[in-house]
Figure 1 (spheres, one colour):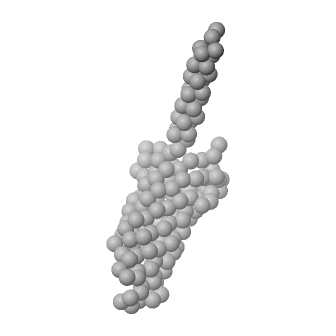
Figure 2 (tube, helix red, strand yellow):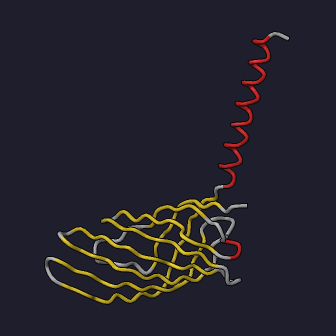
Figure 3 (cartoon, helix red, strand yellow):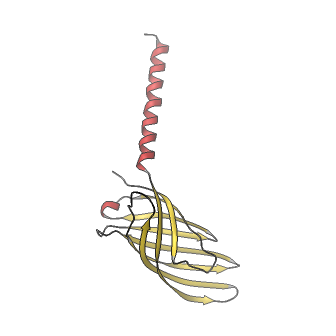
Length: 158
């Protein structure tokens, strides 16, 4: 067998291996599409024309729009602060989601204007080692909807 033919076989093997690794990584990532609905309490800390700061607390239940229903019927407790200065809203929030079996995960949410990004911080039980993140529906400055659509991806370490 020629050296060139061996080189082609090795190159083909490397490309095939890379493809298998990429496919397994994509398959391990799952999509999230859910609604978190509940009651909220907004507590003004400072309210003026120049600066408004509010404490926000919400609790409720999840409705999973995905066919696998991995996040369905999870309860959540959400806390954080929002700031509106110079007509620009920003906020940092944390939410704990607990499934019916008692396993939970925590997410960190950052909002700038209408852009809401979130990421997983921690998980227990079947959610231990969870990673990923995504987007949530943005609210107009100073408004906090009772339901928010949450989309993104997650991966559980095996």
